Length: 303
Image (cartoon, rainbow, N blue to C red; front, side, top):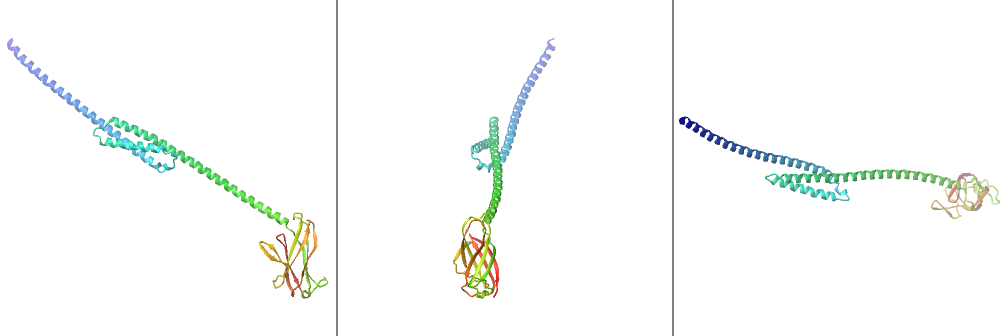
């Protein structure tokens, strides 16, 4: 019996030792696995934070690219508070990104802070762009309004020009309506006794006769009729001073004052006393009054 117990005891001891060794090895393995798991989790967290930081960096670059499209319009904003806030937030984001690049161990809290700053930057950019868009729409409205005003002014200017032309035409017609008319103009050489002289070289006077028709549009009152006689040689047969016409002082041959009441005045005569040798040929008679040339007629006088 004793001989059988001893081997069993030895076997039990060996098994116990083996069990202890196995348990110790198992504990060691578990601890190693836990350490590996912890390291793997830490590495995974760092990779996740690196990925988030990279995504935020790309997002920041996109924001800056979008902002640069509107940056040249900053001077058009009356209030640049948003621009100042955006610039400050942008500087803070750049500072955080530089810190995270230099840190050996990534900080979830720092990444979260960066996310918050990027979010703030987005909001400021949206507000900034909204202001720019609003200003562009306002300017577009002002340009459209300005275009409409210009078109209205052009239409008004065209109407004004048209009315001016109408008024000028009306004024011209009224002026022409006021102008005296003459009819039946004749030129006759006279002898010393007042009878007709057929030979112009023997004439002592030249008589111009005409009629002023009725004209109710002509202002009534005294009218001075100026007469000019032009010889065949183109010389003025003058001697009665001058009168104003079209901004100039024009010499005349004779003049006569009449009282005009709007009614017809027939048989008006103006005489010019011959004081130089007259030759046969074409003579011109011109009559003027009130700044108008009333008539210009040509007559052939013979010897």
